[in-house]
Length: 306
Image 1 (cartoon, rainbow, N blue to C red):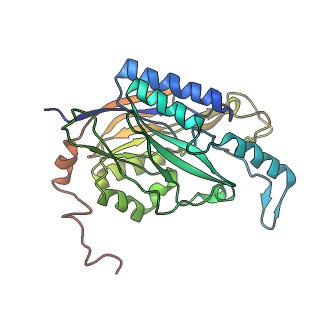
Image 2 (cartoon, rainbow, N blue to C red; image 1 turned 60 degrees about the horizontal axis):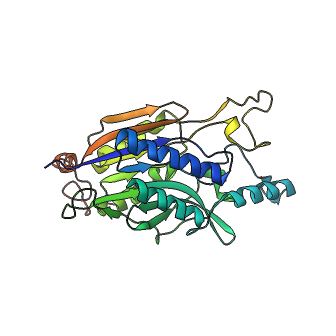
Image 3 (cartoon, helix red, strand yellow; image 1 turned 180 degrees about the horizontal axis):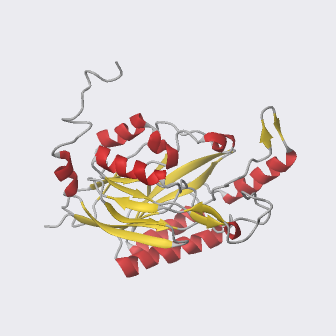
């Protein structure tokens, strides 16, 4: 009997820090993935809800923070969401109506701190888990708090019959994917669908996604934002203030789906908005682990960290 999950990565962006418009976009694209592609699982990019403040510096320099930077942070803080919240409830409702499992990057507001978070929404169970990015990268550290070991789940989901084996799903956000021990943690828990929401649109990112798929013998689903200047609020920072134009690219996509043997099944896409879909034959995972299991027969714990 085929052991296949129909999965999509959604290449899109936040709608100018507007929560209602971004949720409308989420619903439209999720329904399209279901109706057109028959998707059972969709992955949205890093910071899809709340936005990724590319090129912003929030008025921060070593030893000082400017008042206008605090005002910019206030705007960004107000674009974030609580977990749970009405926004989460709407995502849960769309997931249930479409029977699609959703993995999505959000900016989570927890009292006075923001976190870059990935949420897991099950059609039947609603919000079943979240993962907070462990180490924000570079200047991200002035606006996002650090996650910790309490939010490192591998979620189990049955996509077929009730007696079918559960599929194991994880999420690792952007440059967390360069943390070997974090990857090993997920491999050790048996992740099969390794989701990588990101805003890294460099060509080099594709090399990392292929490497992780081969290393972990898992399917890698990387959803990246594609954003232009018009997708940000008025007055938002841009890369070149002397050459502002609504169509200037801020984040250049590159979403991709990779098999456990490193075969690119879909993408990378450079389209402004795209849905990439592939059949994930989960039997390809044990086929791959026949000759490489980095937390099993190909591990050498006696020689690690020497």
